[in-house]
Length: 494
Image (cartoon, rainbow, N blue to C red; front, side):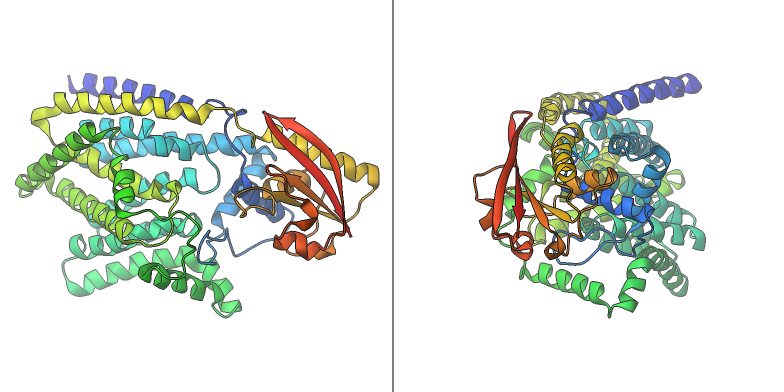
């Protein structure tokens, strides 16, 4: 009977994986965006393959510090194997999401129950923020898999307090240093978990903690090597950001700052579609905590009790720090907290044995509420590879006709942050048209301005890129209609 039950679970899990894959890959060529961050990562990967190695990854959107470069090298490896086809990267991101579902199910089942694993798989499969993230680019699709991997290795290091697993856990957490700084919300809970559930003897606990931090140090080594050669400029910028964030000073005020009420609303959306389902989930979490507390002295549930405690600490850490963080926030900053919360909530629900039928209904109701929120993700968008390629080809044809040797580009868009146009730069360099360095606009003979919106005179744009180039003449080349969007190309010269 038990073997038959496990077989049914495996079949159901395969079914969930197929659905998760489909809802993330649907509209690959018409609605998954190749945005400026993805273009930047692809461009740097291309340059790595051309021998321009780097110790730095992407620059954080706030604070002026840099992340580690491992992600760039991973993208470079993918391009080396599959060719310069960015759609392959998007496909791999979706595969990672499906693997996250499987790994999360396995961890929840091992330390909790089949019910906890299934609830996690269902919630993870349809959670709108996580579906959107897996269809995105750059670091976003990878954050959830690193969260689950980190939690799994952390429990392993506490279950078997060996040096090897301590270092592996530190390395897994160190992967965040190459992806996104929002994972810093987990760090205090990480340390507290080691201190509470690690070795009992003080010196053994100190050694264990040091081995965890050694793993983190290994992953930070490229950044530290860069800092040793450049006066610790990146470390100083990072520490300055931490201090300013703690005080709420020096953070750009023109970007979105959420109130405590807005943050609370966003967090509640992790676990439900409306106040009733959210309330039911919170009640179930409370009952799950009570159940685990009552079972804590049973030998069989010792590891499960440790896992529950670690999830509680990590969830408290990530949500507590999120609530007191005074800097600006975007939705993708919540991917790490959302994944941790889903692990915590599904584990607790799995322990509420007396109302499993009712909770199954609540989970299904949540999925019904979430599914309509996925539909906007599939709307046709301008920033697809096929659309961007049309603009790039127009620039390449003009370069060929005029015989231009030194050129650069600028993207005039409303966000004011992506003028370098990395997505266009990558496609140009992939085709063999190499713009001058994005940091030396003055070296170019002509500047192509890609106006994606607005009616500003390109010669009078106040952006650094345009003023550094110093244009005196502007000529409208052509206007392209792409997915109901008007894209105008200008040629600026000195």
